[in-house]
Length: 162
Image (tube, rainbow, N blue to C red; front, side):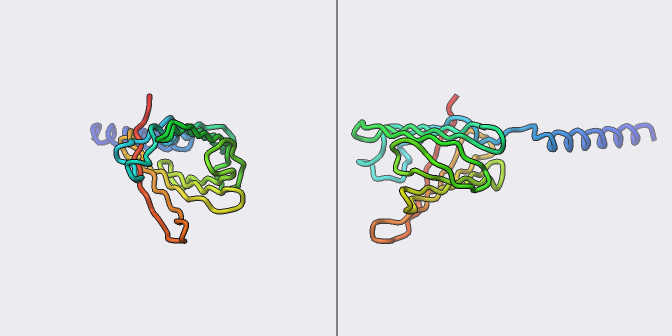
């Protein structure tokens, strides 16, 4: 009986501490951090692949994240983008030279971010970022339209940077 009581007490204690940790938001989203595109697996044709893409997400507080993107194109030119956006889908401005001047973010799950990009009033792309269970790999699914209106889906892989 003592063994049963000890096990029961341990289980109740574990459940209480787990609930408290979840309520306190103990673990930050695995999306936060710096990510580097795996160039060799890029969905772009080899001749158009960038030399480097680094994407960073930071918690900016009050339900907002900041994002920073650095891209070195195949010809050596650089593109940058920065923004601080609410995670509730409210549109906000982006700065930089990336080809989008406004975005919205939603975080439907701790490991999944949905981003919609707009360039001067025209839809640019929708991206879904999902972090694997090991927290070291992130998949980007990019949805956009070709110049002829054809819908295009691309998948890119990112690796976490230290």
